Image: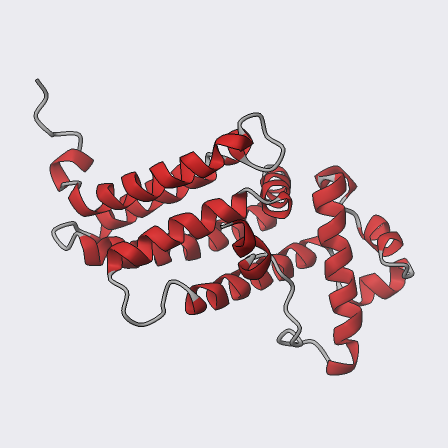
Length: 227
């Protein structure tokens, strides 16, 4: 899936104007967003200021502040863009006709882990969580982003395992998402065991789909019989 990262990356910036953005200012906004992304990925949360972003895109601070008075609005736009691109990738791959729920869930796992293996996603989400630790607005936007991811996974878990309640389906979806995201500090870009990502992806694609298909309400409640 190495080629899929460049073709299907969920962190690509959209070419169309964003809602609420004047068309004549769309290029300026895109330049600011791309600069903000570079700063966050290459320099980290500590460098993520309006002044540093203005310098990165060669604009005056006032020009950047006109479009984004607070850096929190930049974070909101970044995450909205990622969600939008994620939906486009799902439409092209996961939601194509003729696939069953197991294959759709497998594709989600492969897609997410392939994306985690790239520099942009590995560093971006690590820094977003760092910002979220100290900023409730950013934390809320990050939660909304992951809620969207959980909803997508839950859709296929519910289809694969109709005996589960809605709350149980949600728990399984969160587990699957957390299992993938938890790989980031170990197998993400330039992380210690990055060379194991291909094997990890194969194992996860098999094990997480099987889990979604077979786990029971008793097991989720911790009531399964033990030897």
